[in-house]
Amino acid sequence: VTETALQQMRNKRDAMSAIRMILIIRQHNNSYIKQKLDEIEANSEEVKLETYLSAENDVQQMVTTVKNKSAELHRMYTLVKTKVHTISHLRCRRKLLNRKFKEAKDELRKKQEQHIALRDELYSCNLTHNKLLDQIKEVRHKGGIMCYPKLLADFDRTEEFIAIKQGRVEELRRQHDNLLEKIAKIELKILESKMGACIIADSD
Image (tube, rainbow, N blue to C red; front, top):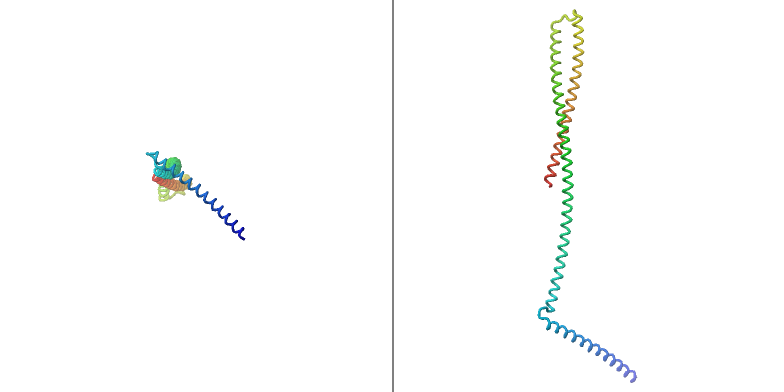
């Protein structure tokens, strides 16, 4: 038992000696490091360790700021690029609308010219129709037409002519109504084109 106890004491003593040696080595290393730090601070009058650490911290902050600014610049570049693309698209759209507006305007002018020509023709036909009606009334008023075969034949031809003219007048009226409807549609398209162009101009 005594031998065992002594052996345990020797083991503990050896372990303590090993730990003491480790502590001595670490203390020596710490002293050496502190000595070197003191030498560095003593030999450098311009740059101190605290100054270096402060400068390094400032540099890190500047790097972070630069990264943030770069990200913001990239975002702004993407936004500007998108805006430029949108403006280019709107300009092409405006050119297309201007071309369509010019075509619609030319078509409206042609339809208006046709409308004027048909209106004049309708007016002339109405005058002829009214004259023929007056002649018929006059002939009927005078009577005795049955006694004059030539006059009766002329009367029949006149009625046929009136019927033809009435058909022509009705046709002209239908054409006139169709033209008015087409003109109204074209004017509506022109108005919509103008409104579209105004909206594009406001967005620019």
